[in-house]
Image (tube, rainbow, N blue to C red; front, side, top):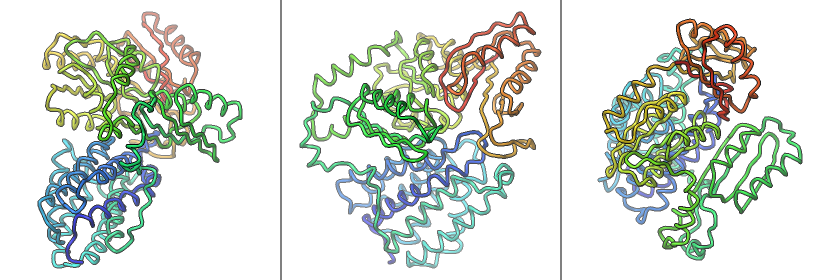
Length: 552
């Protein structure tokens, strides 16, 4: 085979998605940071699966331009986290090179890899070597030097995959944290799996199982009356249980909750995992309830309204119902629509009370997609939008959304922590213009110190410090300041040092892993030693982080 046609790319991409999906958990486990943020595989898979759905919508699967466009747009809309966004940019460069071709040769493929490298590096402000960026750069360079004379695609892709595995194995040479953890880069490994899937399809392995993302045919959809859809979101969740021997009473409690939230309910308990499917108008509340029992392992939300819009007109009754349901979330903002990200119900309530219009559920291990942000922007009536990502792994996603929106002015303030997002809302003024608001918020958040308390999910090493699994870790910003198996001991050590520097106000948000009394005990000891310290304690409800603390 010396030429690839549109149908070849259609099949090969879906095989690549399947290969990535099969190995998603391995990629997640490669995340070397010892806190529970192993989501690279999930983020990359999200984009690939969304792109598969877009490919299925292509009217002419024999036209390369349409296949390339749907592949590119689907990846962007499904992109989650830095890894997902960077992957979408790799494919953007790749597809833009090939979309005007009738057929593709190996030389064309090499040119596409070179453009993929250029576009991906351009998209990242501070590229880090030893990541998927390194893989696409070295892969493009080596393909041009070593594979330019090969015309047969089977031989070409065999060697391309072989080169990719060699580059993956080299990633620890470029990045110290990979060497310290004795692992390869997760994102680079994911791209290598994508290449493997592409190769396998071209060599004849075209059986693909992506049934969990297959949609009903248009003919089947036409048979469903739109007004019969009482609940808008098809919501699926796999939960890794804190207690695999979950009681029958708890299972009944969960089932009763789901029955209150929607219909079409499936609840399956198998080993360490609990799987649910429900049609609901509040998928975020489903996820927030489930994390009371464990860790979200896999989630999926499909907007059934969007799935039907191409065959059934939206009914006025449905729109009226949706508007009534959203009344509780209305703010008084006339000029700016505010969108933020929150990982917990308590934090969501705080954001709402401060004037946020739309709160997207997400955070560590569960980064919102570009589509999540785009839908939120489209739903807001304001012509100016403020986005507060509140997580460093969500900033790039938010910025890409801002680049996509043409009919509204979008300001992304790079809040890296929940505490910064809350402080930003204290500086928010609906009457300010773009520059004034940006300056006011950035000035306000520069005056606080965000402290995150989490725990290690594996033995590791940070800045020369040996970390043991299950130890509590206290970060000031992104710098590890203390670690201990005793939560209070670690937190008090850091807080006392910081308060002695002159800080006067402390705000604590306790998560779902601890009780209010634990936070109060820490606060009381500090107030005894520092009687002028002002303290506020709130129930944040966030997973993975027992305490989020702000000092000012």
